[in-house]
Length: 556
Ligand code: GLU
Image (tube, rainbow, N blue to C red; front, top):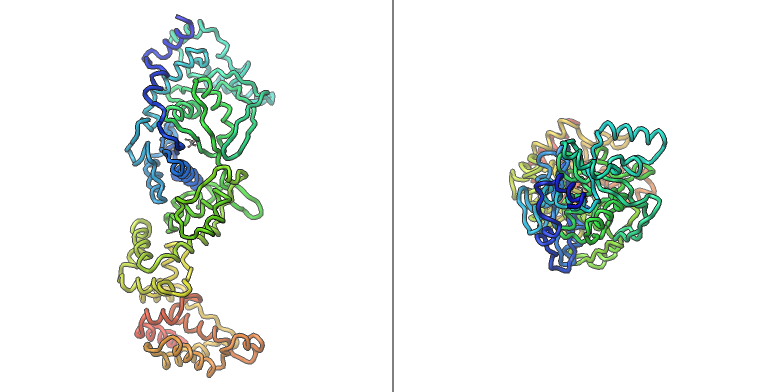
């Protein structure tokens, strides 16, 4: 037996299958479309950047008639967080992202290319590692952590590139005979890749997002199998993306510097190279400068923030499209009602310099999205969202569904101009709680009235406006009559009903008609801004209006 083969047998005595066998077990897929994957490590919540990635994965696969699968990368057992994958799958589902294959639901795998959880694929990695050892392309490394540490310190001191390469790759140069002896004697080892690269040479490849990339070749003898028998990310990536027949690896640009390692691994294993698409990092404005959206600093970095606050998921997806593709907004302008499925996404149209995350724009899109719901749709959406995320709002809207629907209908159903004051479902409380007697009282008790007085608009004037208003208010009046009565009242008290005139000679008046209506608005809602007062009053009802106004009068 050839010496490397002997070494491989000693290192992997239980491995009998070959790469050839794996090629047969996982045959090429008989589809033309792209095969993409999301490969989360179970280390935490769904990051906004990951939502962005999965959106691309799913879109690219589906628009080409391909497959989007999910693979769990759980080889770093120390960093594992319980429930992370369940949580990520649940969040993804709320955004309409469900993998076609792989881990499609918590603890449920589907598809012929599994297992889709790396910790269950140990045998597959070892088959590949054994093959590399046989060919002299991988070797056992007996270096201890202390030895590696000493080397690193020395490299740092001498300002040399850190790592395990060239003369520092101590075990690389051990004779095969010695390797065999040491493995036989039971010495502990890990498995390293034998790189044939030089960092003085460059490789080039065409990234589907970043275009042509030139980058130094890899010369590091990276670890491929760790002491726990599990593969490193690099090795598992090559093995899994080959045998799961991925066509395009879409991942964060933090992996771009590792491409030289990955291409070497694909080549050494005799695998056809995959395509890469490295997604620019999501940036956020911080004062005048830009920085990465940060898990620690930005609440928007966690997808759960948007879900909890009640942003409609489709609004977030719509927003993400605007940062994915420069083609998207012009398309949307001309295709206002079309489904996103009809938009053809092109990776090469992505802004490769970095996507700027703009919360103001998200808010605008979200407002627009909510404004398209009629009162019944809004109720259903808020109801199912609040059931999960906001008990207080859920109780509120269900106190009297009919009343809630009336509130929601104001400036929404059949309105000429729909009011866009809800950015997210959570805003329901702030925007509508005053419709409910107890919450209106609670607000006054806790925060007081928001009336603003000055030398002209005094408590006395507020009193006059409100007491007169109670005399003229008739719930039967139509909107025009109602408003003309307010105008007459305001004029009689010295307010100006013509805004232009008021601007010309403000000193001649106590205030404008807007100041007069504001007094009524505050007495009834304790808000400076509300939807149309006429409809609010009709909804709240005359008895409640009287009681609220009388309450104010009693205090002034
Ligand atoms: N498990 C890796 C991560 O979470 C996956 C990177 C990739 O998509 O290849 O960063």
